[in-house]
Image (cartoon, rainbow, N blue to C red; front, side, top):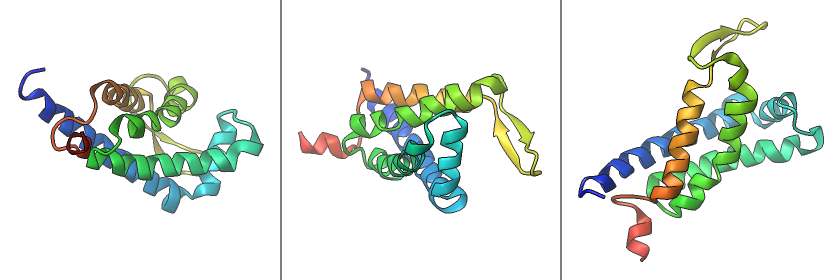
Length: 143
């Protein structure tokens, strides 16, 4: 890697960490665990696992996102995001087409559709699994 590459990884790691923390907050406070469980059922997961998967999604995003910001256990924190992001990309957004667009639901609520953004986040997260924490990561001080 060049001498600046670890700083690029830092930018990627912190940006993804903030995105995941905010999505964890969205799942916990705005949508709520029951709402996330409803999404998991609509995606085709068994209803008996819905609550567990909802809490996994929330915890992985909140705790894993925070760990990414810190650069602590970076590869494991990134790996914890992959199931949620792969599900969002391929089971929820794929059928909406590539480009992000505003969709209005039957309830009148507007949401973002398209798999452009979740695919980018998924691939960038997988890149962090390979790259590690980069500059200013707590992982680097633990070695």
